[in-house]
Image (cartoon, rainbow, N blue to C red; front, top):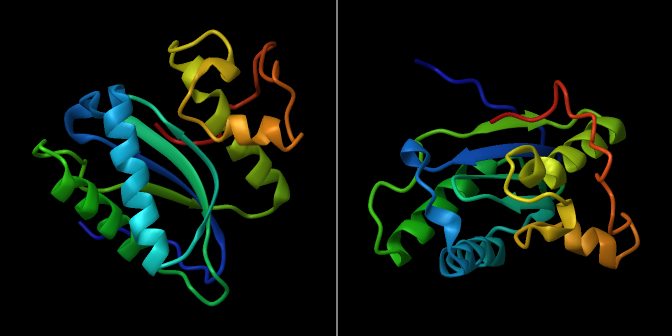
Amino acid sequence: MRYRRAFQPGGSFFFTVVTAHRRPIFSSATAVDLLRGSFSAVRHKRPFAIDAIVILPDHLHCIWTLPEGDADFMTRWRLIKTWFSKHSDLKNIWQQRYWEHVLRDERDFANHVDYIHYNPVKHGLVGKVIDWPYSSFHQYVKHGLCAEDWGGDGVAIECVGRE
């Protein structure tokens, strides 16, 4: 089967990456720290901005913005997954593929940021967005982009994201 990948140099992309068999690999702070290390190592050699991210036990969602003229998120994901796998004692960590979506405009971007930040509540992992530790939501609050109680009344996330 052939998969089409988006190609938009310097664009912003939403990703969903899932563990193999939905195993809760990222249930521990140690595994999350290792994942952060993989992102850091790859960003050092192939820069990109992480605009929003949430790491759940069996998957993660994030938004990246690539440098102007660069559309190679595929290599970056391969390197992140490889780095994590090489530094982990686990085997068969990742689903082979991932899902990406080119963010079309500011509204699409904002809707996907909301989806990312609300995801732990959606999955019943916490009752409030602020209570999930592995989320860029904390940085959004720190920089005054969101109130600490954001999402308390729910968030309209229909037709956004991908599990």
